[in-house]
Amino acid sequence: MTVLPADGLSLAADFPDPSHDQWQSLVEGVLRKSGKDVTGTAAEEALSTELGDGLTARPLYTSDDTSADPGFPGFAPFVRGGRATGNTVAGWDVRQHHALPDPVRLNEALLGDLENGVTSLWLAVGGPGGVPVSGLARALDGVYLDLAPVVLDAGDALDPAVRALLALHETRGVAKEAVRGSLGADPLGWTARTGTEPDLTAALHWAQVCRHEYPGLRALTVDALPYHEAGGSAAEELGLSLATGVAYLRALTAAGLSAEEACRQLEFRYAATADQFLTIAKLRAARRLWARVAEVCGARAAGAQHQHAVTSSVMMTRRDPWVNMLRTTLACLGAGVGGADSVTVLPFDHALGLPDAFARRIARNTSTILMEESHLARVIDPAGGSWYVERLTDELATAAWSFFQEVERAGGQAAALRSGMVGERIAATWAARSRDLARRKEPVTGVSEFPNLDERSVEREPAPAAPSAGGLPKVRRDEAFETLRARSDRHLAATGSRPKVFLAALGPAAVHTARASFAANLFRAGGFEPVHEPASVDASTAAGAFTAGGAPTIACLCSSDALYAEQADAVAGELRSAGAEQVFLAGRPGEYSGVDTYVFTGCDVVAVLSSALDRMGVA
Image (tube, rainbow, N blue to C red; front, side, top):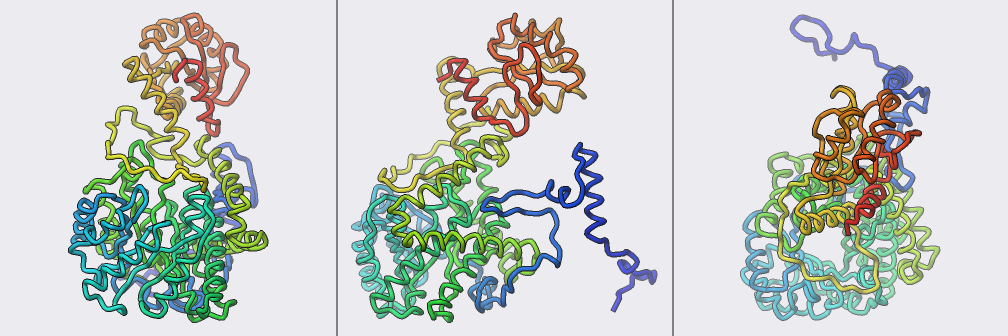
């Protein structure tokens, strides 16, 4: 039935459906205006984005982009969720992470979170950053354990931590069948973090205990965060989680559990990033992959993967940390839409040390806003049916399965960790990504793009140091630029001023503004203070302006290619005579006398700025 407005005219029927070829022709016209003369599929490829793992996000998806049948929510292959109702009944479980050695301070933080929206607790126990096992009871004083499930992160202190937690439940009269949460046993994950040999003895023992006495408690966690935090890609994270899960299934069934019982002892933990579509696809692909494993093992009925999503620590920045609130919001949105059962939002100051009460409040309120105000949990599988999401889910699952098979051929997860295969593969992935970060192909807002040199630093109590064993490293996207900014900070502390760069803008503002803004942004990313006074110079005024600019030692020419051809050589010579030790030019490399280095879109910004600081003697 066609619905007509009051005047009797159809709103849509008179508009013909455009074809893909027509759309592509329009794209070709736009690209020609930007200087790219490409036709056919090359035009579409010019607007595509590489996502890693051999995956590409195209600018347009249609019904022709077929993918595997995702099924229905709550039914195999569980792509659309492990439960038929999704998160629509009560939303996802808001799980706050706590790593405080002081039981009294930890108790205050736990109660504050539980009173204001948190629904489960993820506690670091033992080690330098966790509460001592002897302080666990004090830390959980006043916590209703039958209402607030506890998830342990105990590492090699698993056995005493579990005994203390279960004893506490018994002391408080919580019935065994009412105990919820996870014991967090993850021997292979601990091996990935520390390099120690895996020991599954305690994990298998507690899985048996949970199976027979605590039906609502899971014993093991398949934690993929060590691989993500070492720089692994989405497919590598998924493939290694599968390999770990399969290793645990083999051990659990060998210990006497059925395949279905073994599956029900596992919880899977994944990273959620600010790329919300990749996060959605990753969680959906993870469920599909695990459903296939469960089916092959004869445990199809228990193939619904229980997922815990944690906002990525790799994406968190130390500079301009307030932007982290936006990153974690997008990551939380992706996790919720992707169907995660539990979501942990790391506080925005996570990279700076121990979070304060304000940061924890913002973290827990992120989930509350998305569920209660944005109504995100009122729709089952909101992304379901999107041609892009369904295709990306399918492609990511295929890439992850391929890597999983590589790990299995290498002898399984433990053998792959032991041989160095996992570390080498992830290191290669991170090296490639680091090159993109250095070239700002993957921009980091507030760090490599639009940094604020005048921002006030956010001070936090240092977090306890993690064990420095031989496991996988932890990386951050801001690492290289943070090193540059730290050098600038030391120079500021020693001399009272930051390293300066004089922007020699040629011609009127309409001609030089674009490249002057580009150069200023680029140099600020390395902690350089741009000097752009006066607004425009030429060969007769460049030397005087440079000398009056507060003793910079480097200069950068900024203008159009046409004016460079007319004035660059002369202006560069004047800057040299005035004392410029290094002259840059904002634009593609050319043959200009007196110009040392060219800065342009896609250049290695880290290498260029590091070299400039070296020549200036900035340590």
